[in-house]
Image 1 (cartoon, rainbow, N blue to C red):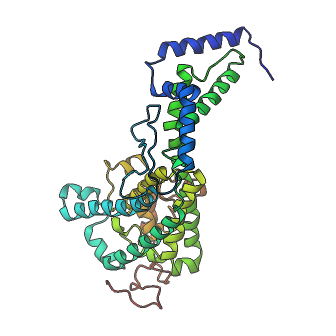
Image 2 (image 1 turned 60 degrees about the vertical axis):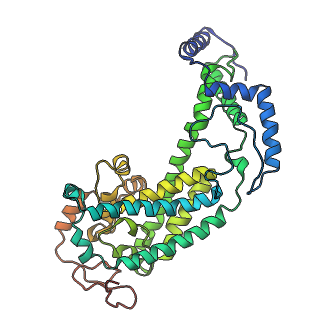
Image 3 (image 1 turned 45 degrees about the vertical axis):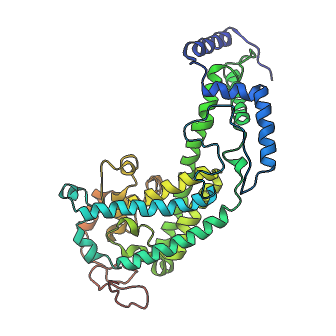
Amino acid sequence: MNRTPNSTSTMVAYWVSSLASSFAPIPSPGRAFALAASGPLASSSSSSSSSSSSSASPSLNVSYPTPPYAAPFYHLHRERVWSPISDSVAAVAAPFVVYWAMSALFMFIDALDLRSLDRYRIHDPEEAKTKNRVGKVQVLRAVLIQQALQTALGLYWLADFDPTHGPFRDHAASIATYAERMARVVRFLVMSSSPVKPTSPIIADAAHWLYWWGVPIVQFVCAAFVLDGWQYGWHRYFHTNKFLYRHVHSIHHRLYVPYAFGALYNHPLEGFVLDSLGALIAENVVGLTTRQAILFFAISTAKTVDDHCGYSLPFDPFQLFFANDADYHDVHHQIAGLKYNFSQPYFIHFDWVLGTRLTREDYEAKKNGRVHPSNKVNGPNEIDAPPTSQRNGIALKDE
């Protein structure tokens, strides 16, 4: 249904036009995109992209035309982020590298034993020796096993790398589509049939920003939300199902005092379901490109290590911007907090909505009100009883 202009719509259209002319910058990347997408340059780019994509394969030795636009700093118009390995391999390798780099950082901080950092420690260093029911050699072995399985799954999942889905897609045409849709929205909002061109400065710049920044940011947040939902559901189920807790999840809870490289100390089944499969499902549901997946997997891994680092650091960016931090997750590792704080690794909204959130203050009150500790063996969840493993109740020694 066509809308006819009236006095109000004319005024609104005039205001939008005036605003655009007042704030329109010198020709920008956004305008270059829209003009390239709507002119002959776009068609040549499109045909080049088509011919390139037809010959594209996981191992390309084709030269690609220089983009007819100004891309943001993070865009690399080449086949590989790092030339020795494909982007698919990089997406699988990134979590491994980040995990041990972050772990090494916190191990170095521990080794320095700086008095100035004592106030930020969640536990006294001696507590790890007396409370934890597994030795660091065992933890290292289990983590490496999980990472080997994670690598195998990732290589299988990301085997089909299509460069036209990532760095060599037709960016100009995509931004032109964004601009056209935005122009339609503006025409609808001002109820005017007067031409609002996709190539107008304000529309072109907005389409450029939306394509290169707005949509990727929303995709990342959505992927984090999907991962959180997956991990919350399974994590809580591993606690409520007595069989799975006793034989699977209780292994992770042998660490009453978490430390950085113990973040992935899990039963292989739990590591596969919660961490590896969860991240790949989030990547697939949201539709991340391979290069977006590299960033998402790397940040998610860094966040997981940070949540187990054993420090409550006010200058830590993860702990500064996320309520789900090392202190929040540490509460879950304590006996009085086992049935709370299942959310991981990013947000706490699932705990908040579903009534499983426990603050540090509430935890301290709950712990102090506990009169008789439970001696029932349920994984490592006893206080006075001797440490036990889940293998026939044999005493667990520090290995």
